[in-house]
Length: 252
Figure 1 (cartoon, rainbow, N blue to C red):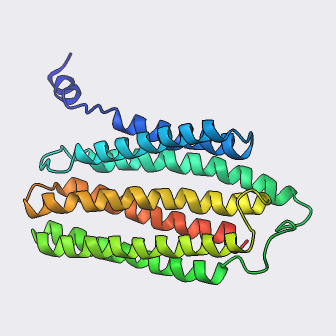
Figure 2: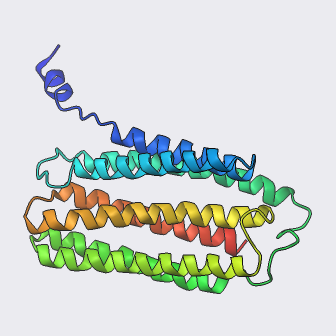
């Protein structure tokens, strides 16, 4: 074996955390959804939901902790994030394909029982607000690159606040629809609306945790530039995902 290969293989990074996130979000949460709404297995759905949520949160925080506070992480964070986003795109693409089959095969869309106003205007305003966080997190990254921990923390927390407002608007939209009797199982469109917005909501929760946990390390001067780049990539991805949800669920 050549010296170059020895040097390269010595720097492989292995971690169980991406696997936890993948199985938690991509398997157990979906199984919980199926158990509840396809098979009316309430207890099984609750157990699967707890397992899936636990695995996703533990894996996500563990994944972040492997880089937070590590100045020299050999720049693998962006590559790992790129692969993670790639798997998310494929998973969400599969869900979208199922939605398209239901949507295009339906004689009438939206189905009977759907309110005339499902909150499309409010969702548009919320998504426009969401996109502001792409700018604030970009500024945060520049502050970190310039060694300005206070500036990084300020704009990261602004990004968190924007996402929190978006999440509040999402919950308000759910509550408004639920009050009209438009619950997740009422028809195929309701399942799609709550499902897609719920998937997006879960990504926001994880992103907020990732952003909040890195602020203390930034003040200690122990946050790698590699991590801030990966974090910025994730924020942009979730914002684009929100745009797709808006188009698919509210404006198609």
